[in-house]
Amino acid sequence: MEVDEPARENWNGRWSHLRKILERKGPLTPTAFQPSPDILQFLLDNCKILVIGAGGLGCELLKNLALMGFRQITVIDMDTIDLSNLNRQFLFRQKDVGRSKAEVAAEFINKRIPGCQVTPHNCKIQDFDESFYRGFHLVVCGLDSIVARRWINGMLHSMLEYDEDGDLDKTTLIPLIDGGTEGFKGNARVILPGLTACIDCTLDLFPPQVNFPLCTIAHTPRLPEHCIEYARVLLWPKENPFGDDTPIDGDDPSHITWIYEKSTERASQYGIQGVTYRLTQGVVKNIIPAVASTNAVIAAACTTEVFKLATSCCNPLNNYMVFNDADGIYTYVYEQERNPNCVACSNRSQPLVFNKDAKLKDVIDHLVNSPSFQMKGPGITTSIEGKNKTLYMQTVPSIEEKTRPNLKLSLEELGLHDGCQLVVADSTSPSPILFQLKMKD
Image (cartoon, rainbow, N blue to C red; front, side, top):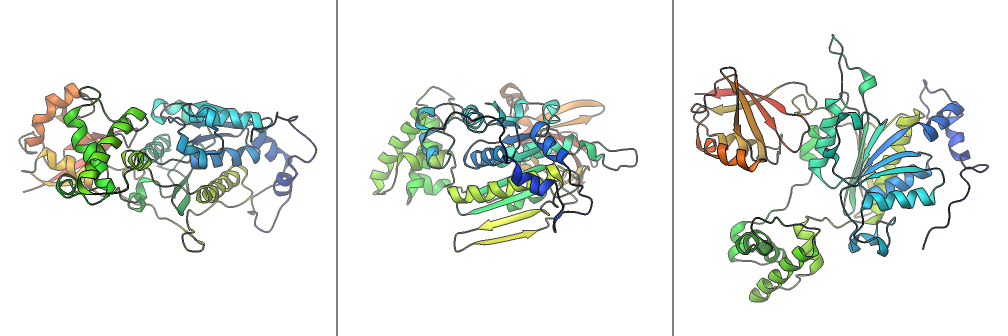
């Protein structure tokens, strides 16, 4: 159904439901809460909210925030609309397929809800610097990427300032409300940077990525997913169907079609049923089946927390809520504790303990595979005799080629010693992470 033309911006009773909460006390209001008409005016005119993600969860968040009176909203999403999105991402229509999610969502909300001003950005969150994020009162996430979650978490923590006594300047704190769904399961959490547990404190809570053994993919496939992985992992780099070193783009229909056709051929050889275009795209993009009702519940919880933090009319969630409606409905709230050794919020260098004959590759593998770090492509630099030295960096091809021989050298051969500081850069963090090397004999 197409939306109607917007009505006049304000009418009698439009915000009466909010006035009942903000202009009088209730049994659940904190003692410090002072009811006032000014709170609603702040919410309508001044409170700036950043929404990251305009997919299944993001559509619900934008709709809820706009209907609750938040008018100064900015949304970031780098993705474009796919036909498969339309069953649950209700701000989009078939005519919008191929367009930017952020731009279409903003157009829909601005047209449908009078007075709302949603500003879209069709880009990565990494494209903006600290000055951009300092312009918001709250940040709410509806992401499906752990890397993006960790990056924005690190950015908000890097913006914190402390006085001479080491006490946090709370005026530099920007709350982060994070929601996530997976099928019939979901969670909502409130993160007060510098005060409560952050994303990196709880890396072990995220579901592990499903990986299939290479030997199974190559020699004994049993599932349609094995056939798809065979085409993706083995055939693509071997045949280079779209030119040398062309990476797979999960949003490019020609790429998905090629993998689908090769997967179908592989499946027919082994008598395997079930390879479909949609499954192929799901495996390539690591898509988790989404349930609209779960998105609605989690978005409602997140939006309620945004409202509570923006108005102080009720104590916020403390600080993690889990939801499961696979069998009936189950929900539980608990306080997630901070990790004193968290790489993002502990404000201390992290120890790395290795034998002096350990190879640099061992250090890289540890940073990638350790449950505490889970890095994606760490680059390491250090200072030796007062000179900066890049030990390894894989993000820049020319530097990667030059530093690749270092991977086979021992820490001692590289000139590293006990107590040496290593500076690690990774896509999971906007700022370099400091490690202190502790070497054993």
